[in-house]
Length: 138
Image 1 (tube, rainbow, N blue to C red):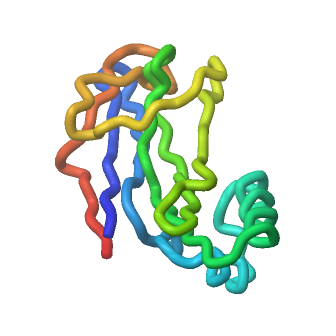
Image 2: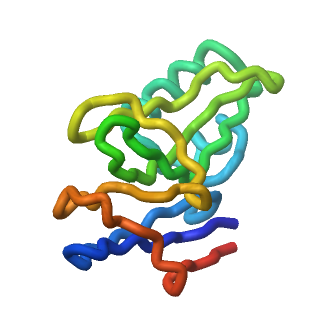
Image 3: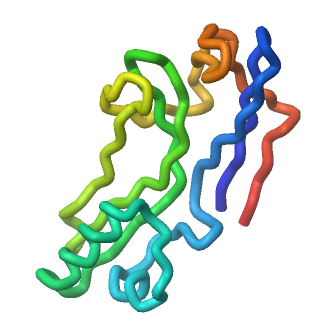
């Protein structure tokens, strides 16, 4: 289950969609199930780390989902596939992301409390959610 949010700039009319939640093959599953499926759904560095963890430990669980992040420096929004690997409920791997503009570490944001973001096209603080274009998926 997930949501897709459309953001629109009041200044330049640029639009972008941001996904949050599970779906489109991105879902919680055992690490063995993910690796045996034969598809690389995650960034190549994450996929490599998962393969290494699978060689070192057994019975690992992958919680993967689309998440929305914001750069604390630039105020740009990003949607990323967040991957956390658990061993008996204890995290042994967690995705970390950096801003493509300033390289600051991205922070997960609550899209419903977000007051503003910077438009990636015109760089003005006029990037807002367009509630008419929200999509839900199963």
